Amino acid sequence: MKFQPSAVFAIAAATTATANPVNNNNNNNNNNNSPRQANPTVYLAGDSTMARTNSPHNGWGEYLSKYLTGASVVNKAISGRSARSFTNEGRFTEIERALKANDIVVISFGHNDGSSPNSANDNGRSACPGTGNEVCKSGKTGETVYTYNYYLQQATRSFINKGAKVVLSSQTPKNLWQNNKYSGNDAPPRFVGYAQQAAKNVGNGASFVDHYTAVAKMYLRLGASKVNSLYPVDYTHTSPEGADLIAQAFAQAISRDLNGTTPLKAYLKQPVPNVF
Image 1 (tube, rainbow, N blue to C red):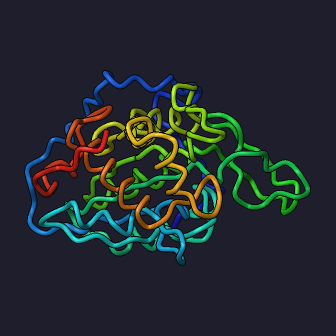
Image 2: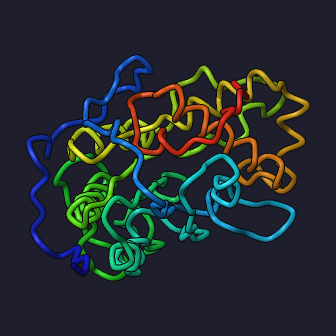
């Protein structure tokens, strides 16, 4: 199917739900502990923190294949994208067309999804506030804008209909050691809980992994000096070493069922990294 943001979209049972705080002991019972299938492709959809970028920084998706076995990785993440812009540019549709049964899609957005689309300076990335069927109008183009959860759930359901499984991964944190003060114990960005809620709303075939908390724990373990060295350009984009470490944290989070069992667990290369 081709994604049509203007189409009426029924968000099952939870259209007006608000995202709950992330609970690391709240496992997602979505039957994702499926047996290992032969040679699935793992497609990655996300922003620059996941995408292949230019030195001196890179996205963690470029390193995930090092920690998987029996599955190939295709990184479709693109810098500067949000759940909304990834939808409108047809990038979810591109992944959907390539899917075969038992493939896995990992979706991670949040860094570019904030702000409001109502402004005349709407950047084409901001989602409508809320987690259900709320809609907004772009102050720049007049287009109908949906919520972050709407875009994630629409894409996830379409992938599942093709026989794939979907892992909704929370966004990665920015540098949590700014000014030598650790902020990882503060409340995470709202899109972390939103992604978890989206996985629950979709149900069977969708799972959630709390990548944010995994990286936050790793950063506490590494300390200020080391973490600061992983951010050569700004507080958001990591060096290749940092991206590799974030991929390791993702693998470890999968192995520990951080917020639920995902279909990726069957493809983890042993030994699994231990970074947090």
